[in-house]
Length: 191
Image (cartoon, rainbow, N blue to C red; front, side):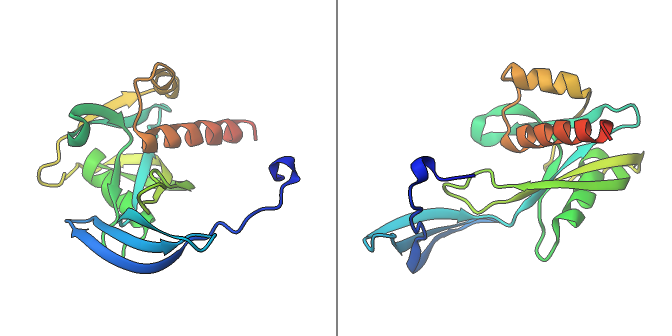
């Protein structure tokens, strides 16, 4: 990687002058910070803090994937997405993944692979999502959270990629997970 036109890179860091919490919700908090920009002028930033999450790509023995249909209230529609969940306090995301796979899909996995971490909304939120592949699964029966309603969907990787190409899959964590999984699977098969 090199800088375009070999320009000298600037210091881009913004320094916090003052922080004010302006909303405290169930699991998100909203802040408004007064900041000092790299040129020493002042401005403000509003942002949301989030505890972080895990998304799982459950792989069945036949190679198909399990996805969930879930109604997402802010957009008032049902989305097809990989199972996921937010971290509980003091929980590492590998524990989140294990817990959420059991709760949402009703399975435990003998083999887990960590793929990567993504940041889905860097302009206004510190949320991170760790992506895991869950393989060698066995059914243990699910126990969903109160008020959680899902449909489980079995889908091939090619079908999922087709939905992505058709613009029918737009949840950012699912899009990223699907693309990382597809590349990871291709690398695994070429070994």
